[in-house]
Length: 256
Image 1 (cartoon, helix red, strand yellow):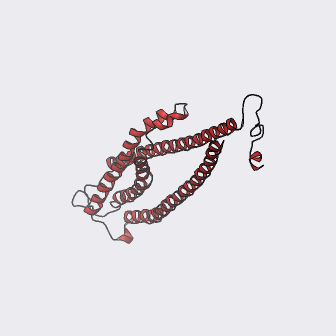
Image 2 (cartoon, helix red, strand yellow):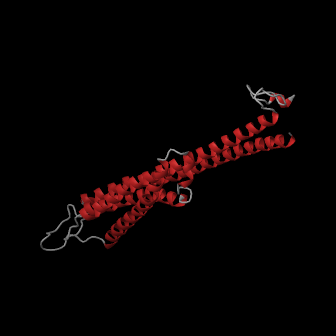
Image 3 (cartoon, helix red, strand yellow):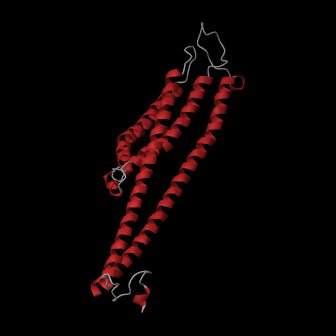
């Protein structure tokens, strides 16, 4: 009785032929094949979703890295140092190191995106469900995450530091006393030095911005990891249900 209740609508009753030669064994076999095919399509849909996500990350990291590294190079080339002003060696070294590391990080992310993205794009443009296995996004998953992290997290944080250092270099020589032709300029006291005040103001503004950026980045990554964990648990439960259903169909085929 229970076995008869599980028969889908429009299907012949178990053990009764539908006039076309389908009996209970054929009906169970057809149901088994439909379940396997639906499971196969769900796995393919998950693979395609991962492929599109990897492609989006590569595109985002590529655009961000190209933009910020270009800005950093222009800032380093176009900055005009006052030759008559005695800059602090620590400030110049910090600016040079920060610019170099910033450009290197973004160029590394751009290199990864440039190498992997064409292969992912070539597969994503093929209108074939089985072609997803030809994409290298699964094997290169760690490199894609590394490029995305370098471009969006570390690269942007270094760019904020670059802005602060650039403000100090540009504003410190302003309103400094002395004759440029006779002797090097020396900064006055902080309350009377408007350039020093301007650089300090930019630093005061940028420090909370950097703190907010770090807190947001940590919160975003934790939320993303929590979302992925929940999704994996749901997928495991769905696979377990499919396995139970497949085992039930296999037992039905064996008992026929």
